[in-house]
Length: 416
Image (cartoon, rainbow, N blue to C red; front, side, top):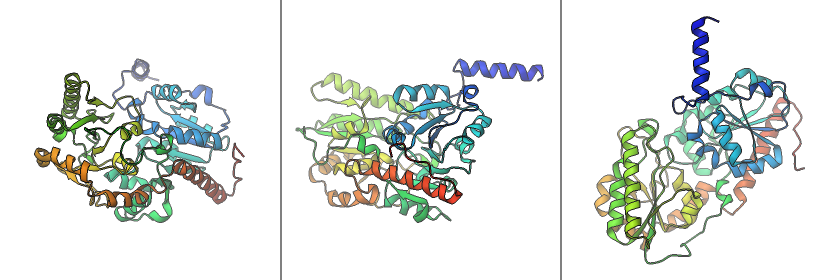
C-alpha cells in the first residue's frame, strides 16, 4: 500500500471512530472479525444500513419483529455501529454491524436465513439483495400517497408487504410493468396493534378541540416535497392559538430541517409558538408531542391536520376528523387517491379561514361516513392483533414459497 493510500485509510478510520462523518454516512465500524465463520441461528434478516437519524423507520417495526423473532428468529444487520448500539438499547433483538461484503457472503452461506426484510429504499439495501438464496421483502415504514409509495424501486424486491387494498391499487395504477396483484401482500399495520387506538371521540373531551398538527419533513427531492411546515406551520399554529377554541399539539417529523435550513427554522418557530402559549395558558395544555408514541398522540386529539404521509392512514381507525394539507410545492407529485379526493385539503391561501374550517370539521364532521368506509380499504382488519397475525403468516408464506421454489427444506418454526 502506498504512503498516500495508507494515510487516507488511517484518516478514514479516525473520522469514523470520532464520529466525524457527514450525516447519513454509515461509519462502517463492523463486527466482521468475530462474525467470520459464524453459523446463524436466525431464519430472518432485517437489513438496516442507515444511520441513527433514520432509525424512526425501523422503530415502528420493533414489536412485529419481536413477534417474528419468537417464531423464526430475527437478526438485525446494520452498517453503522452507532445505529446498532441504539437498536440494542431499545430492543431484545440480536444486532450485528457488517462493514464488508465478504462478511455478508460468509454469513449468508451458513445457517437457514431465507427471508430478508427492508423498511426503506436505501440504495445500500442492494448489498443484501444480491443474494438469491433468500426472498427479499419490502416493508417500508408507512403507507401513504407519497411518490415513494409507488417508486419503481419496488420492482427490486420479490414481494412488498403493504397495508391494504389501497396500496395494491395505487401500485397497480402508477407502477408500470409491475403485477401488484401477485407482488403485493396486504398485512395491515401491525404497528397499530402495539397500542390499540381509542375509536371515536376521546374519553376526556372538553370544551376545547384538541388539534394534532403532525407534518412530514421537507422531503429528499422536489417531487416528494409534501411538508407544510415552512409554508404553513407558523401561520397555522398562530391562527389556532389566537382563536381560543383549540388546544394545539404539534408533532414534528424527526427529519425536519435536515436538508433545508429554512424548513428547520420554520419548525423551530412552531416550537417557540407552542412553548410561549403553554407558558401563557398552562391550564389549556398546548404542547409538543415529544417522547410519546403516535398512538398516544392520536388518543389525545379530536382532529388531525397532517401532510400527505402515512400519519393520515394510521389516523383513519380513530374515525375522527382529518384535514390533509396541500402545500403545492413546484414539482411535487401526489397520487390521485380515494382519500385525497374525500378529505378536506388545506392550502396556504386557505389559512385565513383555517379556524372556522377546523371548528366545522370538529363539530359537524361531514366526511365521517366516507372515512369510515375507507378504513378497511386502506388498512384491512383493524381488530387489535389482526395485523400482526397477518404479518407473521405472510412471512411464513414467503419463506415457505421461496424454499419450495429452491427445492430446499423449509426451516422449522422456533415456536412449533
